Amino acid sequence: MSQINFKPKQVAKKLLTVLPERNFDVIVNRFGLGESSEAKTLDAIGKKYGITRERVRQIENFSIQAIKKSEVFAKEKEAFENLFSAIEALGAVVSEDELLSHFSEDKATQNHINFFLVLGDAFVRSKEDNHFKHRWSIDSDMSEKVHASLKKLYEGLSDEEIVPEGELVTRFLSHLKDVSEKYRDEEILKRWLKLSKLIDRNPFGEWGRSSSSNIRARGMRDYAYLVLRRHGSPMHFSEVAKAITASFKKPAHVATCHNELIKDKRFVLVGRGLYALSEWGYNKGVVRDVIKELLKKEGPMSKEDILKRVMKERYVKENTVLVNLQNTNNFKKNKNGLYTAV
Image: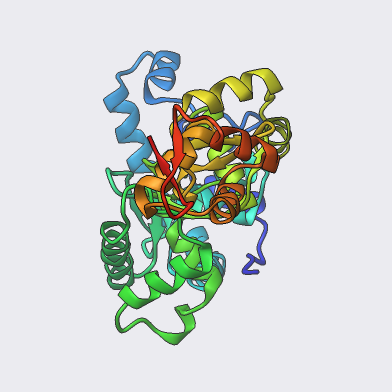
């Protein structure tokens, strides 16, 4: 893991010595470099000194330039070179949140790193927009390539598509042209994926469009869908509720879960409290309905074939199927002894 080998707070303390008292106070408060790690707004600082927010901004900009022109700044060149190398190792373009948390989970230390990023001419911040999060870059050409590739990746995803992480990384890489081999690293590629606001992953590590309920689940039904899909076969509603609680850390009451499964067309009750996904080919309805739909699609069938097919769709006793076949209001035998729907 890429790390810095200087002490941010100590370096910042040296840099701030070049500022007069009020300028020092403005910078410390704006960046959260003091005892409080809370970064103050222009308005809050302006009220303290009885000046406008625009005047505070001017003081901030002047102070930053003063630091950059100082001998102290020149002496700390190695620290900025070290930070540059660390960002390069992370992929040259990194979301702001991930970059800061990579170096430290301590908010105060993060504030000091952010201060150095603002001071260093080599570091370029791009503000959040419709496609991407706040991010820092040390290579404009690389940044443009990553942005363009992420947009193409997003356009290639369908609205409800769920893609395993490995597959998405491969797709992403196919859009990246002329990228240095040092950046063709899985961890860097996954870090780049996190730049996007339009692509995200669900708690199971599967990726897709962030607008999809399969990625950002919005309630019990969505959680149930993801749980069942991951399980890959029918589950009892009580087990679905337990899995939701375990996987999403959301309290899922069994009765509530059952009610939500009943209401959603994505789920099919296949018998004995077991639910399956309709996309697996299960048809809704009771056993009678399943038999009727089967005969409608396949034509007349023998008792044995009906039993075999229905038992694949419904977890019921064979006798339940046979009792339904004996109901002459719904089914009858033709001259060849095969069943047809009435």
